[in-house]
Length: 310
Image 1: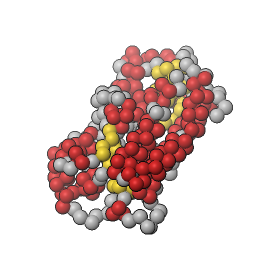
Image 2 (image 1 turned 45 degrees about the horizontal axis):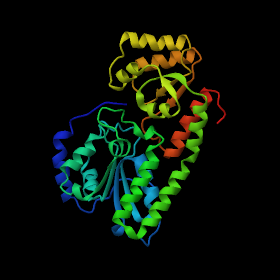
Image 3 (image 1 turned 180 degrees about the vertical axis):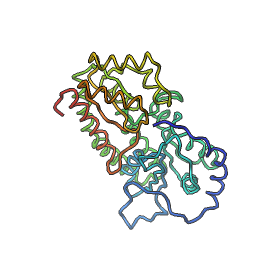
């Protein structure tokens, strides 16, 4: 799911300017809205996240002391094509803490922050570069790295404590609780890793960080990169994937179901016809699931494909 739009760039300055003039508008959907009426919205730390799965972490760590706004909440929205609204621009302008993926994934947020004169006063976390040391051009799907969310929880606890020292111990405690809640993923990763290394093919590099954690060896990086960039894979790369499947050189095929590609559709059909398990993954978090549920369902598919009791 990688189609980059550019029409919004010319209007970004207008959006930021208009955001300053916009007063009293309602914010976007907030994950896990606060439940304590005694804590006024005005006194809460204002947090904006580009992606909703990062918003979940912010809400879990901040609790009633934060007001979290996640901009991308629709799983059908391509983050690369998103055009910031005036409302989104105002939310970013008003935020004290901003979290976004970075490394080229959500450049619209980087541009909003660059155009915001108050950005220097905000706590800004670009997850890919700040927490994982990645750079533009690296695989941007860093939320599939099992280390990402624990690191983000710890970072946000520190950021919230800096802004609100009185509740520092609470932020630290909630961060620890959130990290502990992800323990089932650690267990599943360890179980699958015991059966590795095994070779796999993938439709796109969306799942690659998790594949690395599981010690799954991706056989077709050139094919996957071409699909991600919206190009047809080279004939030789396509033939190699077909050979992997027909000769059963791979244990499973990882399929990003949000990919719009006839080439990939044909590969999926070929895998199914040859008894190669197809593990279905998504780039964005499905509606009605949280991060833990989302990752769990995908790891369970991998375990089943490899004959592992999860």
